[in-house]
Image (cartoon, rainbow, N blue to C red; front, side, top):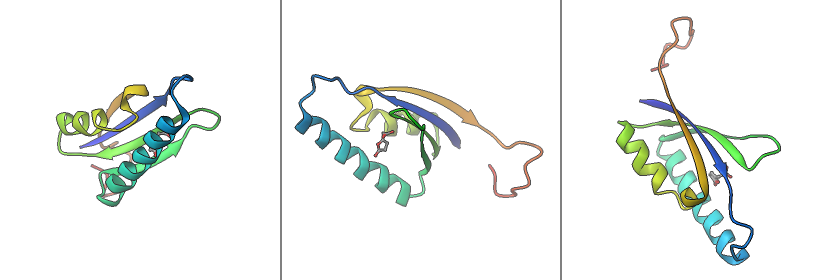
Amino acid sequence: MIFQVEMDVRIPHDLPAETANALKAAERERAQELQRAGIWRHLWRHAGRYANTSVFDVESPQALHDILSGLPLFPFMDVKVTALCRHPSSVRDDDR
Ligand SMILES: O=C(O)CC1=CCC(=O)O1
């Protein structure tokens, strides 16, 4: 199942820099692990914002929730999830 996920990151300004940097490093490691596994299919930065639009390929909404809620930066994110499905005009046979 394919989901678009928008993440707006809002790290508190009073969070110690060492803690924030450790969380960012852990987030990067987890994101790259999920990308290599084919789960986090796309990750794009919103130009000018500490935000991204991502595409996830997972077995269920529960699986997506488990992944997102387990992200190191999740406590500092506003997350919007949109379920995606094949468009009848798509020329890509592998859309699903
Ligand atoms: O920077 C972001 O948008 C949040 C994030 C996702 C993966 C990562 O490394 O940081």
